[in-house]
Length: 167
Image 1 (cartoon, rainbow, N blue to C red):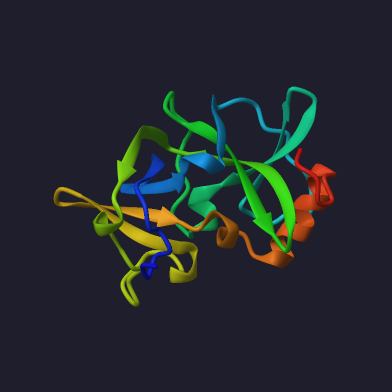
Image 2: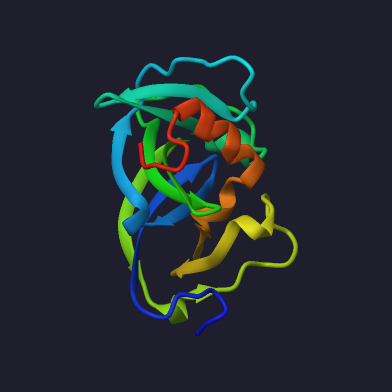
């Protein structure tokens, strides 16, 4: 097994936040939505934008810029909500991750992925599963199950009303 835990060709959805390119495993992505009106919910963490109605289910939406301590930005025509599934403490939750834009679905071989750096990253390295290499550019591969801490997810489970069930 490699240090990143990725041992075979894996497909990723890439997206941008500020000037950085991030990726999540495609098997965690349910769909990508155009930005829509988000209903703000009081007493939620600052990175929680609110909730959307996704075919009758309440789905919490996270501002990934705020989650990663990046400066906030105005919404544009490219702003989107990536609907992903995360598992924390054996609970599955569907949530929206707001991104500046979606780039592409790409495949990476295990030898194109390096371990997360120990220093110099703009976000906490426990969130990073690895660093993908595409030519001279790096892609920050996120560990979707670690991006949201267990205590944060408790509030999100209450917000979505899932309590361990997929939304």
